[in-house]
Image (cartoon, rainbow, N blue to C red):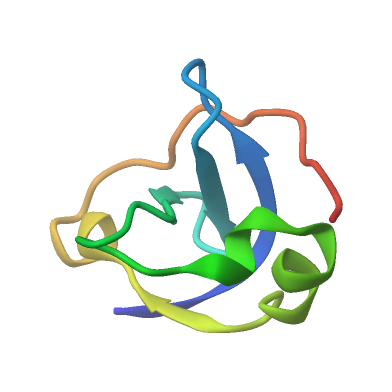
Length: 74
């Protein structure tokens, strides 16, 4: 199910995590050469992706919302 990004926070390993409108979280790592998401490395890049739709596999599986974390704006 497609869900918009509403914010971001970092996990305990300093990887960026997108917070989705459904209450689920999804990692959005920049880990070349496997995954190239250079936009996640800057506040401007993350801000530009607010509202972007991501496929939420947790919604598809019927999982309950994740534990909330303090949102980092930008």
